[in-house]
Length: 216
Ligand code: GRF
Image (cartoon, rainbow, N blue to C red; front, side, top):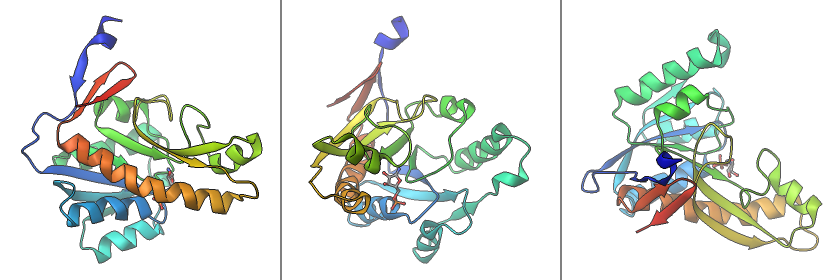
């Protein structure tokens, strides 16, 4: 309980250029948004690694075209999820990474991994958490008939999609929306709030207290 009350500033050296590892499994549009924000000078940081559990991830190809270091590891070659994550932890640490950005990384991180990088892993989720955790959440929002959905950037804990919320953006769910049209509307917001959250992080402006993130 006491622990929960202690506030933790999550990045202690705002004058340093932050080192980011991006984890992805697919097309990589959020990765691109973060990298573009770095290239334009909005985020004071650099991407030191783009990691994937999927060999064919389009995001890996984009990263290579952008001359970023990439690593792919095949989960089938490891005897356990922990063994896989330990290898990834080592790769992340070797690069002195400050922040890990999950950007469509479709593999659940083990508690081993999450505890190693407390308040140093972010994720983007295409719904207004804590509503609609999990997968296919745009379709679920339509099926529930909610009037609004959106996107959430949050810190990652072992409790999937339930870590402290950093930023959210709201979009309307329109009559006649399909999974595709709603996903597209949400994705535009994802590309705004994810780089924004990373910027705030490296400016040392985020403080975590229990479930709550304060922006200073
Ligand atoms: C996004 O919808 C994100 O919210 C979710 O996975 C998708 C990744 O898309 N976690 P992209 O690979 O960044 O284009």
